[in-house]
Amino acid sequence: MKNDGTNKTLLEAWANKNAPFQFPWAISFPQIFKHIFLYSPHISFILSHQLHSNSASTMANLTASNFADRTYPDTICLFDVDGTLTPARLEITKSMEETLVELRKKCVIGFVGGSDLSKQVEQLGPNVLQNFDYCFSENGLTAYKMGVQLASQSFIGHLGEDRYKKLVNFVLRYIADMDIPVKRGTFIEFRNGMINISPIGRNCSHPERNEFERFDLEHKLREKFVAALQNEFPDYGLTYSIGGQISFDVFPTGWDKTYCLRHIEHENFKTVHFFGDKTFKGGNDYEIYSDSRVTGHAVNSPLDTERILKELFF
Image (cartoon, rainbow, N blue to C red; front, side, top):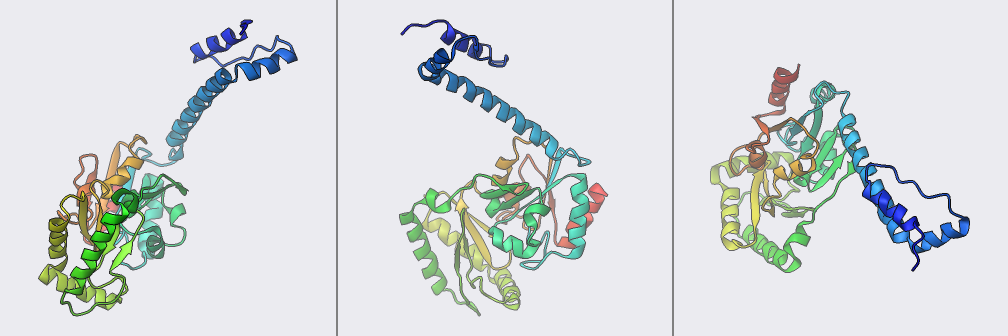
């Protein structure tokens, strides 16, 4: 194939990556069409490189400018939901809403919870994707930034159908043999990135939920259940995390609440605060609370969360 110099011009443009590419318009229209067909791989490669570079530059600028209106744009506050932003499975208070609105003027805010988004909407309100900069459902396995969904992960895809069935069968047999005052329904809740196991069943009423929590504190039902699962499935690579009042989460090791940090590790935040109430070892806030990248704050109620926020930022 004869090379009349146009291909050389294209490749020289590629070699000089910092210079804008200029098509050699001094050739005739028949030549233009010939070069489109003959050298399209080179053209595509060069244009693709430039588009990728421009896209990366644009994303970096967006990341830097998204939060430029905040007093501390390089600081993010992440919150557990149950027991931290709201009473367990109840709605957020007006006082907490107002505190978060003011906090968002100071820094970037987000929540990270084990429940799926629908339950967090019930507690935090229908505009949750607009009221928080980052929304991390299921520990960040389902994630949103500025209302836009990010990449997600699948529990069933990771574990496989056969091993999942063995796990579920064991759980249902174990619950069937448990002697507890009340059993309701939805003992296993399948979520995108994990499963949630509840000995009493997630369909219990709020008074029943409170009573089970007291019963569990005395008899350590969930702790014993977790120990039985660890003994039965030692090769599954799963983490069992007790949270809330009536249940515990099961997910692949590494998919705890620290998973959400993957979504912000390239955002150049200098300070990452986390607020949670289950920060003890075995609690579902423990891993992120004790992570070296995070400044952890243990709270015992939403009122305690507000108190610490006012000490830090107001």
